Image (tube, rainbow, N blue to C red; front, side):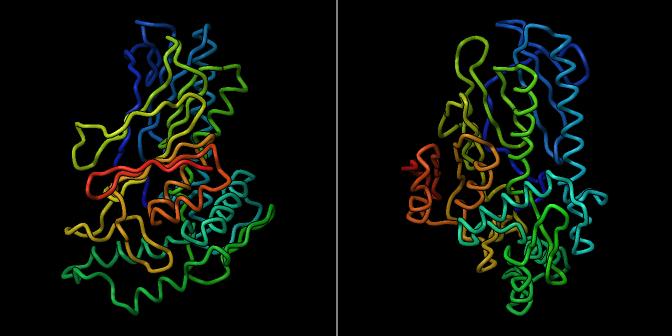
Length: 332
């Protein structure tokens, strides 16, 4: 997992907007009243596209969404010193956490248990180890020493992250949490909930991971293209997002070293970057789970992904292999 600002987008959302109206908000003239907002979200760029017959009501609803984005950022932003997540990492404990923090960390621990620790929100010490190692002058291109790697790995264990409604605790000094493999999806789902509560039945929300509700007001589905990091002008797949969420993980999103051997996708068991796929995209009913699954699947061999999809008929994984071949694994 890595800072959201460094995530290289490997999907494109099929929608257009002309820029007029409130700052950051536009509306398409060609097809129907489609209101579009774009702005910063967790260090990257997010967007909301919605259909609403009343433009003033729609703009008020978008303003509520932006306020909610900023509120949630103040909880989950790893690089915002005053966020609740930063306070947890700094102190090792968080008293009276926000309900959303409890909710998201509980979900993260559930995914960690389900994936046998492949997805682990306590992997942040590994990220810091690689960052500091390669930032040093004359850094060994082979990576951190075995001793340093072992020390960092000793701090990675989701079972030592204790979560309750009144307190969150890291039980070993030096542990740290990152939510960058799940928070973008969580924000997407929360904004979708807010919009649906406001009566919106046609929207596409992308807070770093995308989720469509209903269809585009023209009648066509919301769609996304999956980009090949090795050939960004040639998408390798197009997916229908009607009432589904999409999340993508790519090992090219952030690399620590010039040779590209060590990426933000770090295996919590070995501390290494396996580089199994160019990209992994997951379709699921909600963005939170799509986000976490794409992070986990990027670290797992194909048979393990297929096994993990058993009992999840509403989830599918789209894999772009290093040799350029592709695979589609359906939940069963």
